[in-house]
Amino acid sequence: MGYYDDNRTENPPSTDPAPNHSERRRGRGGWFFAGFIGAIVGIVCFLIFAPILSSLGVLPYSVTTGSQSNSNVTSPTLTRDVNVNVNTSVTNAVAKVSPAVVAVINLQKANFFDNQYTESGIGSGIIYKVLGSSAYVVTNDHVVSGASRIEVRLTDNKKVQATVLGTDALYDLAVLKISSSDIKTVAQFGNSSTLKRGEPAIAIGNPLDFSGSVTEGIISSTSRTIPVQSNNTTVEAQVLQTDAAINPGNSGGALVNIAGQVIGITSSKITSDNTSSSDSSQGVVEGIGFAIPINIAKPVISKLESGTKIQRPMLGVSIVDLSMVPQSEISQLQLPSSVTSGLVVTDVQKGSPAAKSGLQAGDVITEINGYKISSYLSFSTYMYNNLQAGQTVKIKYYRTGKESTTDLTLGSTTFS
Image (cartoon, rainbow, N blue to C red; front, side, top):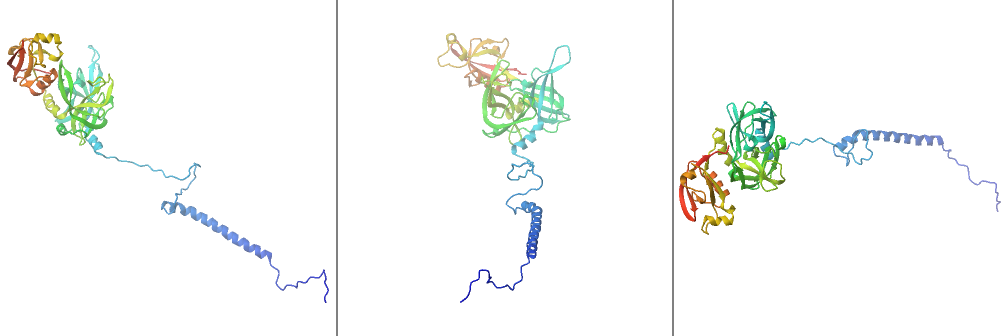
């Protein structure tokens, strides 16, 4: 039987040595220092190699170095300057022909007493030929009409004096001659008879004096006809229709195909009153412009270049379309009911071809050279396009209701 002593300790004395707390602290401090140094080395290595790995595409994001001033940028971006060199069929065509498209300046005297000239108007022209010391420019007749002096401004803005070799108001064409010393490019004429609707068309000229302006469109029609009036004569002129923009100053410029060949000479556009016009005084209908087909222009250009005045046939009469005669006066002509179209002779010039053939005032001409006349416009168009001055033609006419025929030798007139 034992005794319990509250003041006695039952644990036996330990034989292990007491722990050294200073050595334990030194161990923890060494590991921390080594880890800290390793982190610093790792960060330095990352800063050195991260941009290289980013540029190689190893990292899934881009890394840039240096200070960043935009705190709102969520991801760094790389800006590069890109130079684009565009070469198309259109740019090649323009480069080929545009140096040959010039500005034509119409100068007129300010008054009779001094030698000062003022600019009256400006259009465009096409250098189409160089022969020796001379270069030849085709433009519109209305561009040079009324000029006291003509200047041609080349693509380098140099101005040279021009001589008018010939004009034709009916076809609205004129040919100029300038010095060839500064001419480096000559335009090539194409073939307007092979054009198709929808093929590209490029207009080059000086609209509103903006030199060398280029507009692009298509050929809208290859055989459009529009009424053209000159010297009290109206004819149906065959033109090319295009939706390439044509504005005042384009007149006389080039309509070019995709090969850089001139297929037409820009002349006019439709205005809001449905007439062709070369100025901007009326409202403009967009997308309808016209050019003289180069195949029609070439024979005229050739004659004007040589200084030859173009002779056109004439009858020597004053006439009015039968459709314009009041019904009350038609009865005085005593025409058969089968005659519904023709030309009423109102006056015969003394000594004219018509006078020599026996035509009189009151006669109604219904056919010329076998061509049945449906209107004055159709008659004049046929005569100027198909008949020649000096040609003898058969005229069919009615006088007091009786049909007659006569031979008439056509006279000649000029539109210059």
